[in-house]
Image 1 (tube, rainbow, N blue to C red):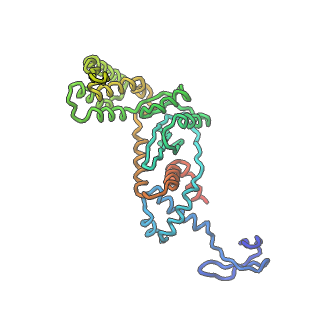
Image 2: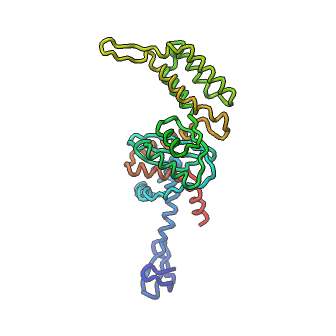
Image 3: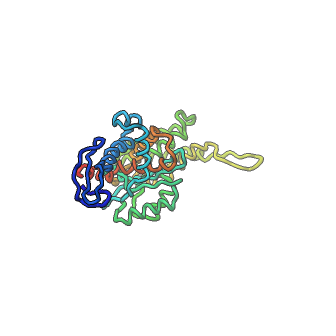
Amino acid sequence: MRCPHCGFLDTIKKGKRAGYSRYYCKNCNSYFTDRRPYISDRNMFIWFVRWVRDKQSISQISQASGYSERTLKNYFYKILPTCPVWQIQRREKVNLLIDGTYFTNKVCLILYRDSNIKMTILYRLSKREALRDLKEDLRAIRDVGIEIESITCDGATNIIKAVQEVCPEAIIQRCTFHIANEICTWLTKKPKSDAARELRQLACLLSKVDNHKQAQLWMRDFVDWHTKYEEYINEKSVDEITGRWWYTHRMLHRSSTHIKRALPNMFNYTRYPNIPKTSNSIESFFGHLKDHLRLHRGLSDDHFRDFIKWYLYLQSNQGKVAKMREREE
């Protein structure tokens, strides 16, 4: 046992004090105890992991661990800002899922996840999905040697622009669930016109398109529908006083335009089996994260961001590897 005062190893045991082994240093004639604070921190880190990842409140952890709530809270808030630096894990080829979600305190979390292994490659905490940030993140992924085969997203303009500028060779797949969900929202559950009812039925069939032949049939039905109701869709109303005009059936026109813009990137998954057709897995991940944050509501803005960083780290392969190393030690 090395003496903490002089650093010499010429020490001997001298009984116990308060349950800890007591030592005497022959070099400087001082006494000290072996409290080993790193062991206590390692034990408390296990409870910190449960607090972040396992949906356990501080009061529940206090009852299970024997530590007081004040001790746990002080330790948790002390370790929150010390999240390890995120490292992009190398893979040869990935099919990316990109999406962002907003929280009530004006924090936007952008995730880049590998759809094959269901793991986060990179993330960014910012105020919004800015084009500059998206381009920077895609370059960072590309510069470490990762080939981006495809990108599935909800159709956000900035995401598509960033992909086209940074990874022009990547295949863009629009999330079919988002398309169908938006159209059903705009047209409501019980549309009044025949055109809206037929378009809503077409949108509900998107989830059942599994191969290229079915995709061709769906596009043919949409073209037939648009040809049949084109005049009705483009019907305009004019204000006689101001001269302003607008589409009479605004939501119907908006829905048809939305599909026409998405068509070039709507059915790429039927030709490339590795490409996911929806970004539902990343939406599910956002849902689990928000459930955890709802349980720990009341965090300050800094602790809120640090909690998200720790959650992403512990849910990734990096966190699992770190945990395995701790067990080996």
